[in-house]
Amino acid sequence: MTEYALYKGDNLLHIGTAEEIAEKRGIKKKSVMHYATNSYKERLKRRGVLDNDVLIAIKLEDEDD
Image (cartoon, rainbow, N blue to C red):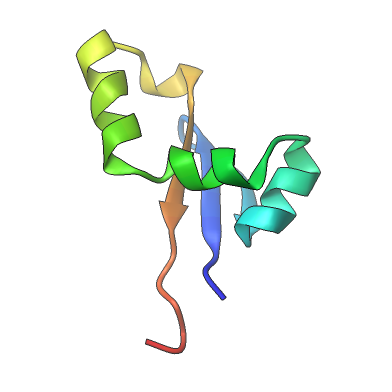
């Protein structure tokens, strides 16, 4: 099962599956997965959004791989 680490700036908020993080944050599972996409991160760069102001998810390696 894929796990994610959710950050706001340098602060680690949660580690868990997209479903677990979504439940803790009160957001959709799809949102957690979106925060880990390159397109989301590129869009933030183009807009010049500061890293400390946004949520970013890092997809952690699957142990089964």
